[in-house]
Length: 316
Ligand SMILES: [Zn+2]
Image (cartoon, rainbow, N blue to C red; front, side, top):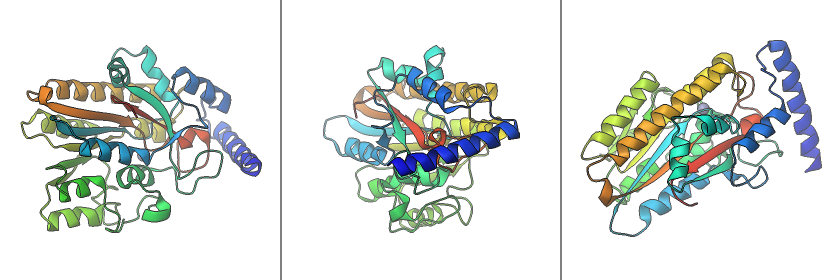
C-alpha cells in the first residue's frame, strides 16, 4: 500500500507540474480537491468509497423487488463530473442532487478504474470503462473494456438487454450523444445493439447530436404513456467543458457545465413525478458519473480522475 502511495504521489506531482505549464490548472491542488469533496458532505469517505459496479446490483435488485407498484429505473449520467464539483449543488437553486436528498435520498463517494485509490487503476478512468462497469456489474478484467474504442463481446451483456430478455421488464432505453457507445464500428455496445435488434427485444439505443437532443429524447420517453421501464441516459456537459478548459471546480466553465447538467436532471425528475401513472410506479433514480478529470483530460491515476459520486432517491 505504501509503495502505491509513493507511485501515486509521483504521478500526481508530475501531472501538477504539467498542469502549471499547460496553463489550465486553475490551482487544482489535491488539498483543494479534498476540501471541496468534504464540502459536498458525502456519507462515506475516500477509503470507504463504493465501486461503481454496485450500480448494477442496485438496478437489478430494484427491478426484481416485489410489491404492487410497477418498478422503474432511470440513470442520469453526469459524464466527467468530479466528486469535488458535486459540492456546488449546495449553493445551487436548481439541483437534482438537492431534490433527491430532500426526498430522503443518499449521496456517496464511489470510484472507477477497477480498484480504489491509491492502488494504480487497472482500467482507464474513461467513459467506456466507467459506464460499462455499471451496466455489466463487472470490471474490465472480465469484460475487456479497459478503454474507449473496444467492442464488447456479447458474453457480457448489459442490464439494458438482460432485464428485457429475461422479461423482468418490458423495455429499456439508452440515450446518449457520443458515438463511442454504439454508433461507431469500434463502439462499446456495437455488437450488443445488433444482438438486441436480432432478437427483436424492446431495447432502444438512440444517439442524439448533443445534450439538448439527449434531453429531448429522455423527456419524450418519460412523457409517453408507455414509458421505458429502464432508462439509461448520459449527458456530456461536465466532460465537454472539462476537455475544453478544465475539469477543475475553479474553472468557471466547469461550474457552468455542472449547473446545466443539474438543471436538465431536475427537469427530468420533475417530469417523472408529473407522470399520470406515477402513484402506481416505484422509481429508482440514480445520478452518477463515469470518471472525474484532471486538467483537460482523464484516463489516469489521480484522485481527481478516480473518484465519482452516486446520488439516489433510495437507500443503498
Ligand atoms: Zn466520460
